[in-house]
Image 1 (cartoon, rainbow over the protein chains, first blue to last red):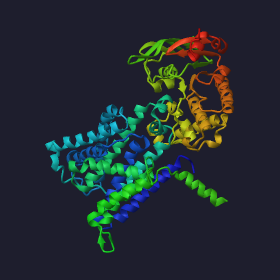
Image 2 (cartoon, one colour; image 1 turned 90 degrees about the vertical axis):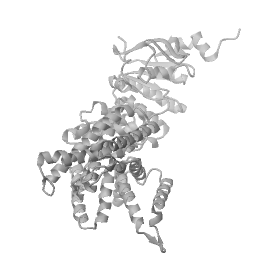
Image 3 (cartoon, rainbow over the protein chains, first blue to last red; image 1 turned 30 degrees about the horizontal axis):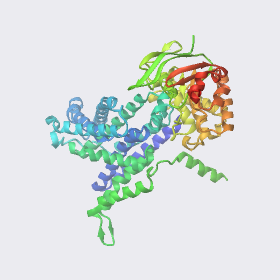
Image 4 (cartoon, rainbow over the protein chains, first blue to last red; image 1 turned 120 degrees about the vertical axis):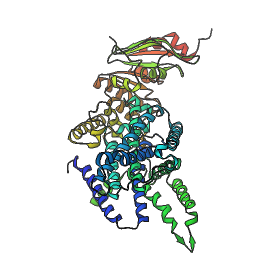
Amino acid sequence: MSKVARPYLFLLVGIIVAFGLSAWADGINPYDQRIVMNIGINMILAASLNLINGFTGQFSLGHAGFMSIGAYGAAIFTTMIAPGMFGEVAGTGMQDVALFMGLLFGGIISALIGVLVGIPSLRLKGDYLAIVTLGFGEIIRVIIQNIPSLGGSLGIANIPRYTTFFWVFFIVAIVVFFIQQLTKSTYGQGFLAVRDDEIAAEAMGVNTTRYKVEAFVIGAFFAGVAGGLYGHYNELIRPADFDFLKSVEIIVMVILGGMGSTYGVLFAAALLTYVPEFLRGFELFGVKFDSFRMSIYSLVLIILMLTRPQGLFGGIDFKKLMKKEIKFGNR
Amino acid sequence: MSLLALNNVTIRFGGLTAVGNLTETFEQGSLSGIIGPNGAGKTTVFNLITGVYDPTEGGITFGGRDIVPLKPYQIANVGIARTFQNIRLFGGMTVSDNIRVAFNNNAKSGLFASVMQLFNYQREEENYHKQIDHLLDMFGMLDKRNEMAKNLNYGDQRRLEIVRALACKPKLLLLDEPAAGMNPTEKQELMKLIRYIRDTFNIAIILIEHDMKVVMGICERITVIDYGHKIAVGTPEEVKSNPKVIEAYLGEPAH
């Protein structure tokens, strides 16, 4: 198989999986549907944050801020701009067009704000950058809360439910394809070089500022798209949905999955979305876990971090593992 | 015209003059050394040349071009590569990826071409891998191409840093204490390696080194710095017998 075709084949497999998932999930009960949907959206958020935190090594704590920009942007597009362009689209094939354009609209606004925030703040490193991005996330939330035309703290209600399982997992596939291809390319080595040693990267002719801003902007774009999907599933978005805790939730997925491991992060996103819901109905020796499920969730995090500080999949090279298997097989 | 010219370069950190009024030129294809006691300002000179610090006064030209206003990555792109006193490899990346970072600067494939990875991209990529393998082969590290840089032994890490710098296709290579932490046999090999690099790649090399055997053994010209000021310059023989140099290293003779 040619080297060009292989990644595209993987993308195709991803899209087929998205189809399969949507066929399966359409039949399950609405409660489980919501879990599956949240898993998909969290996968997009975590994978995109992984490009910033994991691959480029810039600690951003403002991902929920970008998510909210995308959510509001997309909602504004489908509720205010799209009806003027296409008329009534709900229920017709045009609803997907409206959603697609809405997601793009939200993503691009989020990316533009990513440039605006990124250029000054990415001069900072480590803890300082974390504080600035944290501040940014909160500023966005407070600003939105105080704009009456965006519904203030009540948010925007009656957003049409355009998000389908196919859309969510299709975008998961695209994000994974994008990030995998980018970080494997020669161009993409710049992101990893910035993470490992900024001074050495600079001495090798890598424009570190450009790479950091690019990672930030790409991450912001996909976070915005995820926000748009969230809004068009939830039918209601409020500033409180995108608070500091949401950012932390995404960070935890990235750290738990293993910084810089896309598949690890996807797995962690699924696990951390499912576990709290799973514990709701869990019973052991007649003890219901429902009331202290969040304590158990925290305990799981602590144990995992103590035993695998590099994350579940961190430091595992799947390519090498697979090659080893084959070698053993041939012996 | 000389390749690199420092013209009255001065840098002050607060009240401390780390480098004062340094004027020096380095020729194309030359092999020069900078020596001096600890804290004399040798590494600061490298940091000034590579743009990590901007001089407080004075100018630096490279190939006739003023490089003071350039950022470190731009200076690397005009043809000055360096290694570091405390090895700075990209630890979490493989040996070949460490070198691949160098190709990033003149890659035609930008962000989107790199995501799409179509035929042009593949051709370019194959070309890079050929060059990487060739370089690694020259330095006897081809079998380690897929190892993580942080897992290499010390000597290989030092060597990889040099290979990585060479992959930037520099006209001038700055080596900051390349022999630090090496045993006598390794030092001998290093000396051979440095000569070999100069002759095959036909580039100028400046090295900072504390090991006098290494410096005296390979450098054609040596600049001695003490307290940020140039106190002597010349061939190894001239420098060795210069009373000012002896004084800087051993103190004033007793009367």
